[in-house]
Image (cartoon, rainbow, N blue to C red; front, side, top):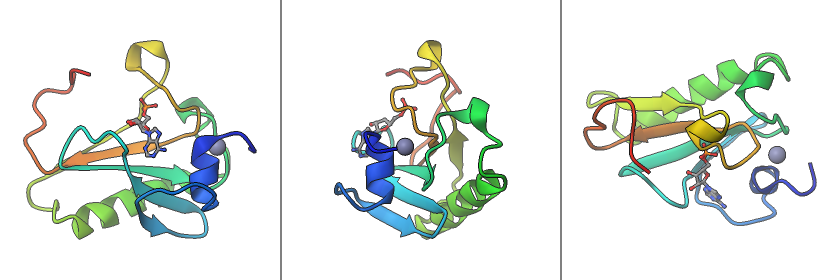
Length: 115
Ligand code: AMP
Ligand code: ZN
């Protein structure tokens, strides 16, 4: 999608702190990190949100695989981490390109996080 910010990051058209860039999936650091590690894992092809999860069959598997590999790279395999999708206004979805949040590096507290 031409105007989508995460499509542009996946294509390398705008800068991002990329930690993994594969043929189907890209992972990059969140610009407004809510934890010492806050990385977004996205499909390179545009998928609007998690309700469209079956677009590009198999990409969700790769997203989870990448999330776990990146978590290992960040040294989080022992301390733990959180993987999260937002959907809709109550969850504060702001970017309409599917993204899996990887959060870790501190105790994350209960599931509902402020901000
Ligand atoms: P969500 O609220 O689930 O839609 O999360 C979108 C996330 O994208 C937020 O945590 C933003 O900080 C992050 N974000 C927005 N623009 C960028 C960008 N250009 N580079 C990195 N992260 C971004
Ligand atoms: Zn997109």
